[in-house]
Image (cartoon, rainbow, N blue to C red):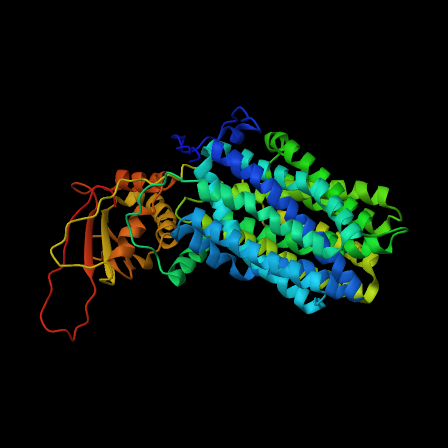
Length: 558
């Protein structure tokens, strides 16, 4: 059994600069270290497979659009299925989800190897296989990324995300070049076989891991409800919403480099699979450098300036790639692009993880990935069409201009300053005892919370209730209203509904320590005897015979 780690308490918010944690600190966690090392092998195989698929497409078709669609076929499933995968990651054992995903990709890779060896691949069947591998990636990624918080302390999450980027790009620095050698020496089928073998180590490590997770106290959410909850949470979280929009723009524009790189390598003097692999390797070297300098940049620059730097750096990469006639200058440009790729995407990922509680982190990460990879899929098709009509060099120049414009979107959608919120459960609420025999599906449940507010405190009260409304709706409340008593203007009643009793319980258990501020201040403004009175009622149709009593009981922390 692989050892696990239990997260220690941490402050709710720390606006003051803190000593930077060691970039290698997450490797002190045995499970993180084991999975990280196994992922190196798996990522290596995936990159070798990607080189084989991209280069095989250039040999079986002359269409620039079909070549670009190899990238799109891998990223499109992440855009389409990622939210469902995030809901699965939040509602099921993440280790088992990753095992299923890895096993599925192993089977698809074996089938791709056999098809390539038998010589039956066509452009569309090749795209079909890469699409299926992308489906496995879509299922795996939210569970894997959400599991980072189960492996390392919260303070080490940023370093863990950076180390994951380092690991991937260490393999990227050599994997594509070795993949090019394999393709040149033994053909694409050999590259696909290497990828098939690379899954075995990671599957073994995941099988041996037994994470120590808290017991589940509530029934699992239905898939549709869980997906809706994830969408609602992100839509009601301004920070995450900005990350999602900026990630889409980054993926849409930056993917032009990797999508058109096979064409650039083929058109160079003495171009071929070795040049293509070497350029991808240069991208990986730059990404490793970007991961290691990311901690220093996060200490010196704001999140927004790091993202803008990422857009501008990638525009430089695309411009150099468009104008370069030989692999050396193009390689330097790819190193710049690799560094900026990691700086931007690692910051997006870290921001989402640190802005999301554990109950919904898989869905928040999946929506971020949907935006980023959806932008990549759309961008692969878009820049492939431009290259089809005007050539790869001109398409890259247009993409560079689009990157500058997308970076300027930060003036309208700036990322907020970094602040670490304490998103641990608040754990103040306990399920009330009621007189009616309720089941988890009983409902709808209507809740009224009554406040007594002095006239002088009304402006502050309304500001707090606006934030309260956002938190309530974000965590699942419906039909939220605020009413003022006409006969006694000091009395205000907050009302909302949940569809069932279990959703009411779930709604209250989702509140985090970071949400306590508005609630505490509202209780301070309340001038009634005791805490604000809370009424809980079950909605019934007037046509029902008989009258059911309505439980009414105050609680300490509404």
